Length: 111
Length: 113
Image (tube, rainbow over all chains, first blue to last red):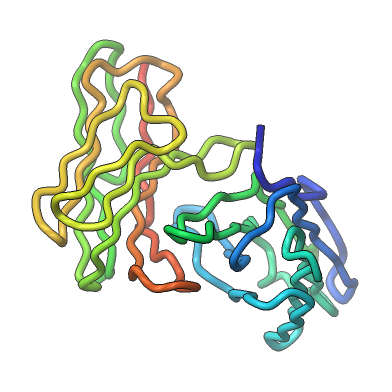
């Protein structure tokens, strides 16, 4: 059983549309990280959210950490083909900071 | 040069063979990790090491062993490979402070026939 549930598993949209990816858990995390992975490469960190209720923006990407520190969302505005990839959320433990990963959301943005 | 280097990048082998996957890093991080990635399951932790003398089992360590030869090197072994160990394997490193990212290699695609 996955500690972190991501939804949807797959998302295919047209260039210029918006999308949201969700990451939910029954566990409370010290922080939540989002990674993006492209074919043939390892995941690369996009952002870390630390405080409950925190919102971070990275150009067209907006990340939110839930008030109870159990869930997070990633919103992409006006998606571009370069946003295509596998998006992974990961929750950090309180004492050793080990990460538990969600199963990932595969995003495809069609030109 | 990559900060986290995994070798080999691809490997095809037969059931019952012993296989070693190697990872080296130039980031100077104390913590190193081995994960496997399967479609629909995300990244699952196999083993991790917080320093040279520290080795810990992750959530799916059965059938695997590791060796931390130096701060910069962490290898993963499959003593007797079986087909359900076919997967993409990633090594990662991190600092030991809160909220730090993990830095991943580009993975080893392992197929066991």
